[in-house]
Amino acid sequence: MESASDIRFLDRGALAGYVEENLWRMSEEEALAVLASPHCTASVCAELAYSSRLTLHYPIRLRLVEHRATPLGQAMKFVSHLYWSDLLRLSVSMQVAPAVRRAIDVRLIALLPGLTLGERIAAAKRCSREVIGHLLFDPEPRVFSALMINPRLVEDDLVRLIASERVPPEKLAIVGGDRKWSCRYAIRLALVLNQATPRAVAASQLRYLSRRDLSDLEEHPATSTYIRRCIEKISAGRSTA
Image 1 (cartoon, rainbow, N blue to C red):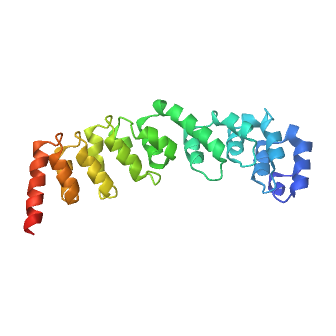
Image 2 (image 1 turned 45 degrees about the vertical axis):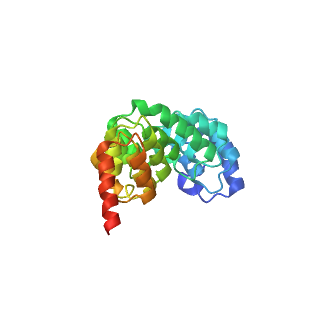
């Protein structure tokens, strides 16, 4: 029987033969070495996945979900047995098959209500776009602040959130004070248009808007008296400049 350190030197045929001959007595370390081999095929992954003895070991279940060669049915079977932190990592890994990543997203979303505040904050910083759509509406402002640094968050996500009737003033203030996002024109305009935006935040965006948008806002019946007066001052200043 080969040692775990020797398995990496086996070619495809030798590796398949080794697994077939030793599956019944293979150790966790040896199974992980097989999965780490560049010659590990779908049939080899399937043999390991069908071994109830080997898949009792968490690292093997994790590696089978992660491995591109694992048959989809087998990979998805183990998704529900993974820790949320590993699910989070695998959900954005391009090494994982797209169908498996989608299953992971579904599992992560189901787990969100049971995660602690700290776990949701950690998830918000690096989760997938599918999970972003759910965390945008997390009631805790600290989760939303963490989401703002997620590299997968895009402008359209925030514009849709700002336009939502569900968004609280605290989140609008966070967006308005964010250096990266508050300078985007579509976000500036969306903040001003939302009646729930704190008036100081909305007013701070006005000087960056076009004459046409300011004119439309001034004429809109829902625009507050305070914002209308701010627009008048800006327009007067522009006309004398």
